[in-house]
Each structure stands twice: as structure tokens, then as C-alpha cells.
Length: 182
Image (cartoon, rainbow, N blue to C red; front, top):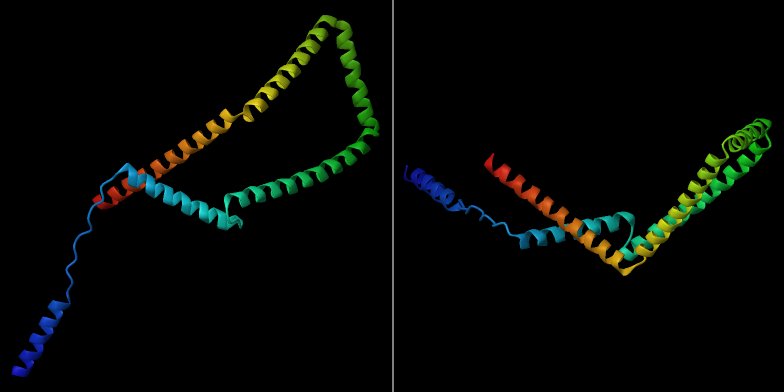
């Protein structure tokens, strides 16, 4: 009997000593600094995953890959355009297309004869619209090539990235708080 009490006692002592008391995890206080650090780390992870996905080792490689793909697409587009030109050359010789072209030209000439002032006004507006479009394109090119445009682009990209990170971390914090309350 003593042996039985000894074994049971030894079993109880070993079971009690094998138990590990754990402390509850400490709550981390929310701070924008930690939020921004976490966001930056996540963006670096996303960037790394993106680079691995497309087979690039750095952002410069991405630029090269995009340029190569763009050139490939441009070449393919040129081939398609050449095929379309060849196909449309055959259409020019069809009698239906010739008749349609003659009919449209006749209607335009009739309209110009019946309404010369309106036709002149339309031609003037078309010329002015073409000039306005050319001016706008010139201004856009000038603006896009300026240093201010590059600064605005970089600043807006940083703002967008920061906002994305902030909302993502906020969403994760809210999700964690919701999960804790459940």
C-alpha cells in the first residue's frame, strides 16, 4: 500500500511541476510610428513578391521588362496594322465602296452649295478645334516634362502609399479589436 501511495504521490508531484504558467500577452499600444513601420515592411514584402513574380531583381529590371513587353506589343500592333492596310487596299477597289465614297462626296458638295456660310463656319470650327487640341497636347507635353510634374507625381504617389498603409493597418487594428471582443 505504501508503494501505491508513493507512486500516486510521485505522479501528482510530477504532473504539478510539469505545468507551465503562462502570462497573458501584453497589449501593444497603437502608435503611428509603429503603424508606419509595419506598413513600410509590408510594402517591402509586397514589392519583393511582385519582383519575384515577374522575374526581376530590382525596380530597374521591372522598367526594362515593361519596355521589352511594350516593344513586343508595338511590333505586334504594327504587324496587325500592316495586315489591316493590306485588307483595306482590296476594299478600295470594290464597286460598293466606290459608290459609297462618291455618294458621300456628292452630299457634302450639295450641302456646301446649298449652305456655303454654314459649311465655311463648320470648316472654321474644325480648324480651330484642331489648333486647340494641338495647343493642349503641347502644353501637356511641356508640363509632363517639367520638374514640377515629377515632384507632384512623386508626392502624390507617397500620399497614396501612406494612405493605403494607414487604412490597411487601421483595418487590421479594427479586425483585431473585433476578434478580441468576440
